[in-house]
Structures are given as C-alpha cells and as structure tokens.
Image (cartoon, rainbow, N blue to C red; front, side):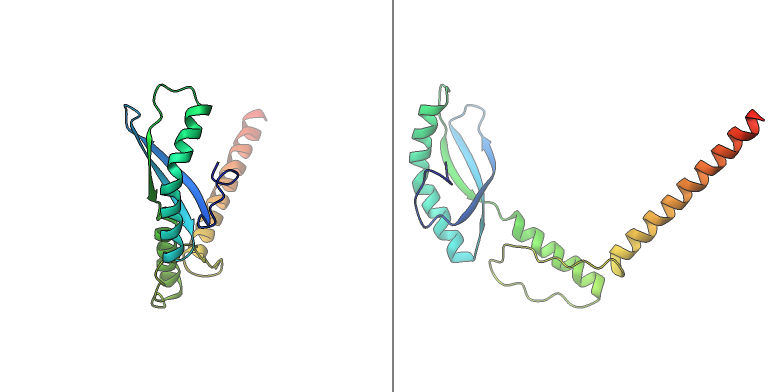
Length: 149
C-alpha cells in the first residue's frame, strides 16, 4: 500500500520493518526504516503518520477483523546502529580511530578485508577446522580398511 497507493512525495525510501500489536488489537506500532538524512526521515515519518488514517480504512475494507488497530509510526534506527557497529569493527581491524559519524547516516559502508584483522583470523580458524576434519576422515578411512583386511 505504501508503494502503490499512497502518492505523497514526502514519503521517501521507507520500509516497514516490524509491526507490534497489543493483545486486544486496539493499537499497533509500525516500525519503519527510512533511508536519508534527518530532515528526510522526519518528513517521511510525519507523512506516514498522516497517511495511517487512509491505511487503516483500507485495511478495514480488505481484512476480516473485528477491530482494525490504531496505527502508530515509529522510526526503526537499527540500520544506523548497525552502521556504527560496522565502523567500530572496521576501526579495530585497521587500528585507526573511528571516523566521525555524520548525523543521520542510515546506510552502512562496510569494507572487506580478508587478509587482515578479524577476517584473517576467521579464515585461519576455518582452514584449521577443515584440516582437522580431513585428518579425522583419513583416520576413519584407514581404520575401516584395517578392520576389513
């Protein structure tokens, strides 16, 4: 409905990430992730709050529920928190102080380093596990051959 039926240009790149309802279905929190700066997110959330009356009415005609909940829009900032964690991990891997995070940044920009840092340690551990598994398989196969012959 957000994508096809609401023509408000203030609603930018918004994605519904979760909906929580109260047990009696009187209220529902609609968690929305918005890509953009602080002003774009604020505009999108405000436009979504105004469009919830239309959405609720449409849900009432399309769903067979005794009660359609009041819809309350909330900003889901998990992507922004994820970006911060990725930057911290990146700074630990490189040994460089983390760069200042711009306010309202909402997309992670991860870097891939298989040759150093945690990536190298994980690859080394995986290789050691694989080598251990191969040696155990060889030992089992040799034991099976001895048992047969």
